[in-house]
Amino acid sequence: MDIWNDEQRLASHVNRLRALVMIGGQFGRKIKLRTGSFSGVKTIGAFWMNKDTSCRYDYELLIKEGRAKIIIVRGRELTNLTAETSKGTRIVRMPKGWTRIRVVGEKTDIEFKMELTKGITDLE
Image 1 (tube, rainbow, N blue to C red):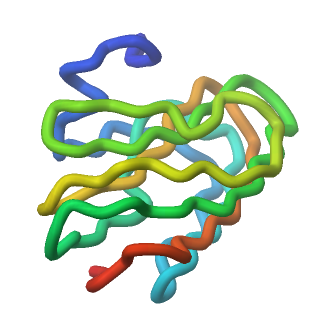
Image 2 (image 1 turned 60 degrees about the vertical axis):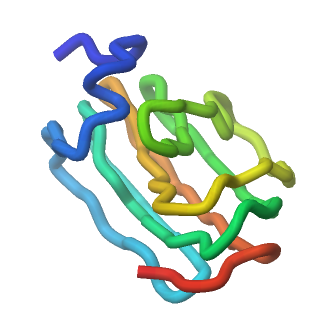
């Protein structure tokens, strides 16, 4: 399952994954996720922007094994949030419409936390 750089698969709405453990999801403006032996791509959060605005992402990703990245998908446009163990904040200009947060991994064990704190109007 070689999807790491396959933009068509990463931007699609289809989740393709194998995992022994996948716990968590979106809770209001927060996303928490823990995986074990995860490979593939999965949407872990989605939200709607009523107008063009900026959005602040406060995140923390711990990669214990394998490789993983968190991406932001807006239509066919992809933005890497992080692809390494890190903690930080990113502000991204967001167009009106749906935006999805996806996790991509190859035989990875991760812990991920994120909070959307600016410009969010409606979460689903």
